[in-house]
Amino acid sequence: MSEPEEHQLKTPASVVADPEAIEIMRMWWSNKEPVMAIKPAFNDPAMFGRMLAYAATHMAHGYKVRHGMDERSAYNQILTGMSDAIKAQNVQTVTEPLEPSGSAQ
Image (cartoon, rainbow, N blue to C red; front, side, top):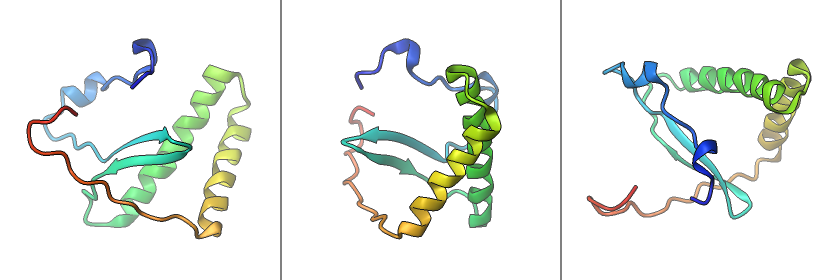
């Protein structure tokens, strides 16, 4: 990735210290579209919905901290974006081949 190291996301210490922590998803914006690696780790898909709701709340706070936006307004814009994507019903899943064992991650 071309992102400077200071902008790269770090694994939180609380996660590193938790032997039962499970990574659920990684997400990038690449070639003008979202790209993600996912693991459907929950038996109940509604739990993933809860995680997305938490992510929206935390991202709204991030927009407040990093861009000075009103947190509630940022949250509502995030929800609007989600709603627009859901209503469009034009999301296609494209599966990339898995890299052979031992390849760079």
